[in-house]
Image (tube, rainbow, N blue to C red):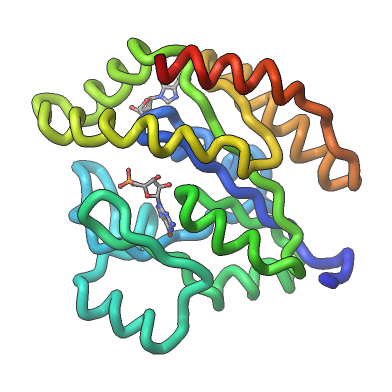
Length: 210
Ligand code: ADP
Ligand code: 5GP
């Protein structure tokens, strides 16, 4: 087991466009002890994204090399691109007592969960409704109808993994959602789990996939 002086790992996953990147950055900005795990990806940067800050943008050969070297904690193919989390920087943060935030998908979460030695707390974020989700995707990808459609088509598959997570929260009002996550994180850091009603969550998920 990791000793107490080690940091904890907090995973945020959601269907595309729900707001996990926004929430991850907000959590990291709230306290210097949180560090975001910066992933490697073969996808192209979006306008405003900065190499080594938002992602390490690499080509497929560089990505494959890191797989061969066994440098990844986890990696996955998502849409037509590859994404992965390096082991070394995460282990360094944890050994320094820092907490690490992961904005990764359900495949990455499944891989991290296999390592029972990790102090891992996982969140699945839901949108308040589909209309709001489409608006968020539309704002982020103005004019890219095909890309929005592709991401919406993946929604049902992604949301079906909600019950693989410790906590499910709805990102309607950003501050409210942030406060809810921070409350859970602060309790978890004291070893306390918050009870969630799985039936209510299942009902909400059912509404969203109707
Ligand atoms: P994800 O990382 O889950 O794909 P993002 O964090 O990129 O999603 O958010 C998608 C878009 O929605 C962004 O333009 C972001 O600014 C916006 N957004 C995120 N959360 C909220 C919220 N609670 N209310 C309104 N807009 C939001
Ligand atoms: P985007 O291209 O919108 O930034 O991210 C697409 C998806 O990839 C999101 O669900 C995001 O959480 C996920 N993702 C980002 N980095 C990683 C990673 O290192 N590993 C895995 N498994 N998923 C990631």
